Length: 148
Image (tube, rainbow, N blue to C red; front, side, top):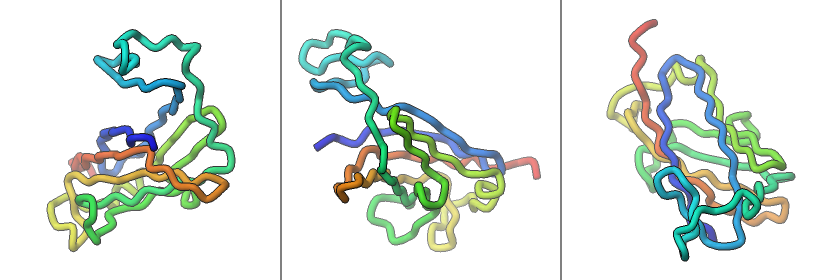
C-alpha cells in the first residue's frame, strides 16, 4: 500500500486551471525533504537511476472535490472520462479545467449551495485489473475573480 502524496493547488476563478506532474517509483522508501528526494532509511539523495516513471497504460482516474473528507457535497469532479484528468505511460498526470468551468465555481463558505474557498479531493487510479490505488490527496484553494 502506498501512502497518498499530498498536493496543494490554487484555482483562479475564471481562469484556465492546468497542473501537470510525474509520478516516479523507487524500489525503496523515499520522501521529499526540502525539495529533494531522499532515502527514508539513509537520508541520502535518490539517484535518478533509481527512479522509474509509473506506467498508467490502460488506467483511469477519478477525483471528487468536497469541503472535507466524508462531506456529502461534491463541489466538482475530475475524471479521465470527463477530460479533467489525463494519464500516460511515462507517469505523467495532468488535471485541467477550462476558464468557463472555473468561472462557474461559487466563491464563499456555503457547501450546501456549492460555494467554497478551499476543498479536498482524493485522486484514485483504477488499474486495468480493477484494482484501485488512492495516489493523491489534493487540497484546492479558490482565488476569487475580481475582473469580470
